[in-house]
Image 1 (cartoon, rainbow, N blue to C red):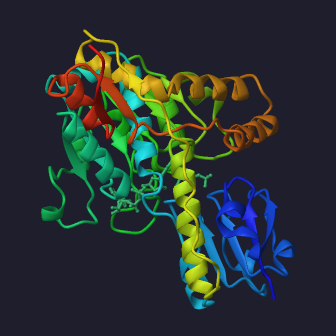
Image 2: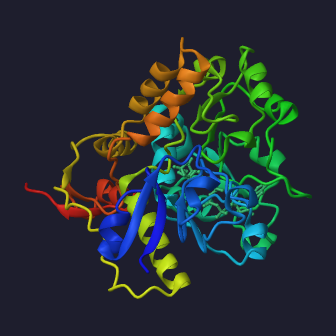
Length: 384
Ligand SMILES: NC(=O)c1ccc[n+]([C@@H]2O[C@H](COP(=O)([O-])OP(=O)(O)OC[C@H]3O[C@@H](n4cnc5c(N)ncnc54)[C@H](O)[C@@H]3O)[C@@H](O)[C@H]2O)c1
Ligand SMILES: O=C(O)[C@H](O)[C@H](O)COP(=O)(O)O
């Protein structure tokens, strides 16, 4: 019998990768229900679908894949007890998040200059995203400290306590969302932690909304000495607190990990895992080739910081995502606003990652070439 797979409508390229040997049904993920799964063998979701006994008990589903790095929307213990196969996409979007974070730093005031002149980034969470960010910072010559109490101190370079992280120039939050003691990340930044921050600091949250207590943050941002804040994630998605959005430097619709490269990587990881888990006999899965890109060209005689800004802006303009969210949120009724949040994510532009891109430089041994390599690009010799 042909395998039937229900796939979230926002997971690209499943048909192209699996070919015609399977039946693929598409559905919006947010309100997916058990009735839709009565004759389905496998389910591929995103973070907006809660996967648990309520959704799956009594259905024939034998495999669940989520095209995400975070798994806080999945009841892993129940899946295990029900002997339902599971896969996720760890690391698929790590570089996409890193490029978002660097774009946010580069866009905001002179943080880039301050960091390159000896400032420090505090990174919370040393998982796949945290590690990828630290590697990039290190290549860019930017100092960092890391807090991840779940890991042994020797395995965490620049190990720091949360209190020490809160004293860094810039604070990047990348823990998974967990309520687990003794180090829950839920409301990791609450009233006390936010009170410790000063005006010249920048906080970026591209992990999960509830890592910061939204009410406490709004309260903190009402004071003139408040830190600058960039939020990609919101405590009650798809609802966005409009008052909070009005007070942050940049606000986006949970798209940090949404590069097209990342989405294809995740689809490929899930399809491979599903084929292996269900023992399906399909021809070897084709790689979804990404379109080749022309080399980028960087203007000469820019400072290193402005070269980095120019390089990032060739691929990604973070303020455009901020404008889209503000337009969809401010002065809107909350139900319309929530729908618009999902629409922004569904119709997200095809954003390519910078990493892997070739870039023309004048001097292959010069500082621009070093910068280009630090961002994971390939410097190539330009014309004289
Ligand atoms: N905004 C986006 O588009 C986007 C994209 C990718 C991932 N994410 C989120 O970012 C999170 C990090 O992604 P990842 O792939 O690195 O996950 P990961 O599971 O590889 O790493 C998470 C790390 O957080 C650490 N951690 C847990 N509790 C902590 C605490 N209280 N303090 C400090 N560290 C703590 C864990 O020990 C682990 O090392 C994911 O769980 C996901 O929810 C968001
Ligand atoms: O956890 C992740 O991988 C990211 O948050 C991911 O970008 C979530 O995207 P979604 O599944 O909501 O489309």
